[in-house]
Every structure is written in structure tokens, then in C-alpha cells.
Image (cartoon, rainbow, N blue to C red):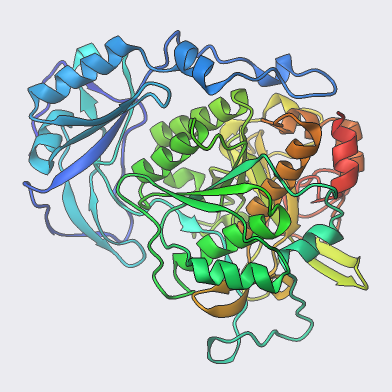
Amino acid sequence: MASVPNDWVAVEGSEREAVPDARQVGDVDPDREIDVTVVVRPRGGDELPDLEQEAGDGDAAPQMSREDFAKRHGADEGDIERVRQFAEQHGLTVAEANEARRTVILRGRIADMSNAFGVDLELYEHPELGTYRGRTGPVHVPPELADVVEGVFGLDDRPTAMPRLRRLEGAEGEVEPRAAAQAYAPNEVAELYEFPGGGNGSGQAVAIIELGGGYKNQDLTTYFNGLGIQPTPQVTAVGVNGAGNNPVGNPNSADGEVMLDIEVVGAVAPGAKIVVYFAPNTTAGFLNALTTAVHDTTNNPSVVSISWGAAEDRWTSQARRAFNRACREAGVLGVSVCAASGDDGSRDGVADGHAHVDFPAASPNVLACGGTRLESSGGNITSEVVWHEQSGGATGGGISERFDLPAYQQRAQVPKSVNPGHNAGRGVPDVAGDADPATGYKVRVDGQNLVFGGTSAVAPLYSALIALINETRGHPAGLLQPALYRHRVASHGFRDITAGGNGAYHAKAGWDACTGWGSPKGNELLTALGP
């Protein structure tokens, strides 16, 4: 048992509870080396610009360069040095320190990590999560670090998120669409939604966060050649925390997510640079991939696409706080963050009888992307309703129990939660797009031509749309919601979805907790946003 000195302090929000149905199966190897990410406080406190207050009527809030941001809001050198001294005292080394991201990655033996942070690490087995290294209770730090450390991630390595995609199944793994199924190439969806023409995303970089799997260049070349897109869009892999582009060779693996994301962005905005940040599927890996993308001064992405998530209650509050802050920083830097709202309806895969929303989509600093069923004929939309299959797949959406109603949603008539207590929280999603696999996206994964749906497809779809908008306006959009929730933008830029539901919530005129404002009318949205 790790002993904790009496004067040490628990890191706020770091408590872990035992996972239901998990059983302890053994001891961890005390000599195994692991990395742990320590997030330190920002220089000057929490004084980021208020993007809603500073935004003018026709444009986004003033934005800051990454270099200026690091100087004004990055970590203080003295705080990083305090963490370094702490590491040395406990037999740990500093593998990486980044002032802009405010992260210090420590490396050392599990035994030394356990003693350094006052935790007991054990091996657990879970029917869904598999075998993982876990802990219960809080993480501790000495009093001199109590005001310095905002979060500690990586002691626990349980899988943190799931991809938000659904495959249209056929005979023997091949696509034989069900009756009334209608599949689209991603650029065909963009045409139905009247995305702006005249540009291709040139000069923009779209970041894609992936927590497993990989892509094969031959598949991408074959796919884009088949769509008449040449040259093949530029795709770059960035490894985070030892991960990289490692295709499994099975389209039912995370490869499906990776290829769906890349192919949607590349088909809609083929001139944009696509940068895929691969990280382990842990809280530390996910967070480090996000902050690496947001603060990347080499690739300078203006949009981040996230198709992974989990119900907000399955995250520690220190994790929600760190992700939310990272997405807020993205907005200050002019980076828009799009995230899938989930594929399991209003319960978000939690079997407790209550409604749940997905995170990070629930962050008020994220453009939450819900799902519809899109039918068309002759190049025109004939029907669009909330995505809700009889087989169980349905768009995520609802009211957050963890994030307050943001100012930009005050006039959107967001209902209170259906859960006991009827919390008045952040409404999810903000927007929506085609997600039903029966009206899904034609993709190529591991040498197979398949059809995928899910809100996983909607996040990269909006990311590509924002890249086109940024190219045309000559200015990154950053946090879009304050503009999207203005009446003239919401009423002109979106197709209101008024039919269907996702379980506890139902579509209606105006904003709703299934499809937000609805699906995009790209050209009108661009015009409504202004020059």
C-alpha cells in the first residue's frame, strides 16, 4: 500500500471509483516504466479572453497567435521546475515539458510513480474494457505543488473513449444495403448540403484525433482516385505518447474510424492539409493528442475533428476540466473543435435508466455534432429526420449535468434535463448532419469498399465545412457557437429538423436536443456569418 504523508493534498477532481463489473486479476509489475502527464496552472491564472463578450456582431472574437499565447497563458518556468524537482526526489525523470500545453510528462517505474502520487495501482479485467491498470481514490501531491498541479493523468490506463461510428452490415462483410438504404460519397453529402463552392480548403489544416488504428496510403489513393480527386489529399501522421499510424488490417477495428475521418475531410476539402494525431486510448493519450494539435506551431491546424467520446459521467472532473480548458484555448487561438455527440441515443450507452450526454461534445467550447437520416433524389433532399434506428443506433443529445448553460444558448429555449433534479445545463448537440448508416458514407477501409455512418462522420463533415468557410473568409472561425446562436445565422444557415427523437428528447421547431439547429445550408451559413 502506498503511504501518503499527512500534509499531502489530493488533486481536485482526481478521484477514481471502482468500475462496475471489473475484477482485480493481479498485481502490476512494479519495475515497468510508464509515463504520467502532469498539467500545471497557466501563467497569470485563468484569465483567458471571454470569446462571447469580445466577439463583434459579424465576426469572431479577436484571436491570438500560438507564440503570444504561450508567453501570456502558458506554464511558468518556475512551476515546471518545481515539478522537475519533485520528480527527482522520487526517482522519476522528465521526458517532456511544454510551456504552451502546460504539460510535464514524467517517466519512471510504477513503484516510484505509486509512491510519488500516493496511489495503489492494480491490474483489473472488465468485459468491455479488457485488462487495464487501474486505481481508486484520489491522486496526491506535496503541499508545495498543491496550487501548481491542475491534473495528473496516466497512472490509470483504462480505455477512455469509444469511436462514434456504425457500419452498414451486409452479407459476409460486404455491403448489401438494407431496403431503402442510400449511400453517398462524402462530397455528394456536401453537395446536398450546398457547401460553398469555389474553394477546396487550400491553406487550411484539419487536425483529426485518433486513439488507435491507422490508414494505408494505397487505400487513400484508390479511394480518392475513384472520386476523381487528384492529387490525393495530403495526409500527415503525428505520433503522441508513443502511438502512431498502425493499421490493424480489420475494418471493424479503429481503422474504420481513421479512414472514415480522413476520407470525409479529404473528399469535401481536398486542398486542406490533413494531420492525424495518433495517441493511446487513455485519458492521458487523448488529452495530449488534443493539446498537441491545438498548440502545433508546425502544422497550425484551424480545425480539430474528434470522433471519440464517452458519457460525461465516466470522466473524472479533473479530466473534464482539462479538456474543456484545452478547447477554450483552441477558441482563443482561432481553432474550431468539432466532436461527435454519440451513437447511443439519449442514454449514451449507460444502463442506469437516466439520460446522458457524450463528452467532449458536452464541453461548451466544442461544436457538438448530432446525426440525421438523409434521403435524396435527383440531387435534392427529400427527407431528413433525427437518426434513430430500430436496431439501437441513434444520435446522442441531451442536457449536460456537468456543464452550465452557456451564454450563447440563453435564448435558444434549451429545455431542462429529463433526469431527476431537471438541471438547466449545456444543451447537446449544436448542429447535425447525415449519420444513419442506412444513408451513410461510402468509404474504403483495409482494401474493402464499405458504408459507415454514426456521428463520427458528422464531426469531420463539419470540420471540412469550416475549412472551406475559413478559406473563403480569410480568417479562422475559432469558437463558432456565439455566431451560430444568433437568430439570423441559426434561421438562415441551417435546415430545421422537426421529426423524430433519440429516446428522451424529440425534435421540434428551432433548437432541440437531438439535432441542435439542424443540418447545414452551407452557402447561406457562409453568407450569414459575414465577411
